Image 1 (spheres, rainbow, N blue to C red):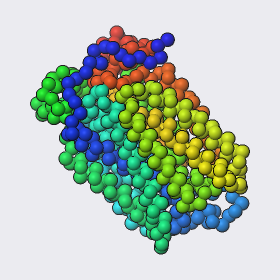
Image 2 (image 1 turned 135 degrees about the vertical axis):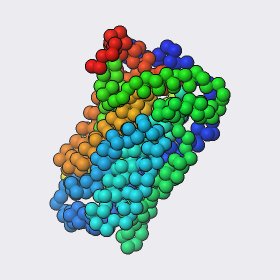
Image 3 (image 1 turned 60 degrees about the horizontal axis):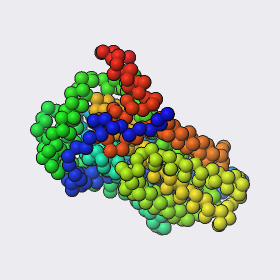
Image 4 (image 1 turned 120 degrees about the vertical axis):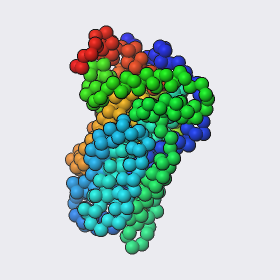
Length: 509
């Protein structure tokens, strides 16, 4: 049984062109959207572990943390209002991602990125100046709108701008920027913790404006992708000039012809969300749901959101906890950079498998150590605490080599143009739904499952690793507009694609 196949059809033919400074600089600006997303993930966990912030906005949690000794290690931070601060961003991003889809399809990737940057700027200002919980939550909601728009457009922009054989590396730049954002946030949290007067958290929240400003201003100078220009306009000559500039060659007719063909097919589709549920798009629909779902149930956001809290749970002080979060941030960013270098050489499936095994083993070991050595009221010895930190770093490295970057890359490259905006919206929305659910329930799950939380997420890692092995074909080096061939050649999905190819004569079922 052929589990994964690299197609050898006409879709694998190389287009002319090379990597140009123009496409590199454009992609760097766009990928800054990842820094915004990562910064927010990293800043949240650090801020909610700061005593002055808790005392001002969440006094109940502050009281439990400082005065109630009989509460379990796992339950100190269990507060629905506290998790609402973290998770409100993601429910706002969920709604915004569906609003962003028609904007992306009708007006292009560039305007969508600009809207996301402006929303994030306003949200960061409100967060830094917050004087009450309502102002704080409103700022988070606007940050969510920014995340929804940016995460909708940036991965598509990167995949469409990149040459086919380097698409993986260019797209992983988004996840690399997410890692840089997390690392920068962790360093800033560690620095502001030492500010006397207890107002350091305001700097942490307000500094989100720095990457948002760079993205918003830079986006005005970005070129629109040739795919998008052809999709929402008829100026093929402008698209050809853009393509020649980003590819560094005048011989782009073969790629342009494929883009025009894909666009003609796309323009015949008036309702992409209705189109994507057709049988012939079943593989893409399944992947647009399961890949972001699996990415969230790896448990990574548990580490990213709540790393400082988690390290305090195992007995580290506030300052040591924030520094430990910095260490995991460095590991994650370094591993993502390695993924960027190797993804177009070793392929997506091999990285999914290797990273999955690495995450599973480390999570099982962390769960065992915390179950045996920590308990409800104990403290890990320095040696075991250090071992847990090392295992968490191994876990983060595994994620950053696999589900971190590939969870964004694979969905952005598998959709045909006619359903691309709808497919990306579903991907972003599913990711945000489960990010919200996990963010909202994690502290309660930690309180009730205790060390079992690591076995819970480890089981999901095992399931997703098996799923990828059997059901995800290799997408390496294929032009994005010829990706349909991977499903026609796959042992399972070909029954859906061939069904429509043989029998679809205007059928809408």
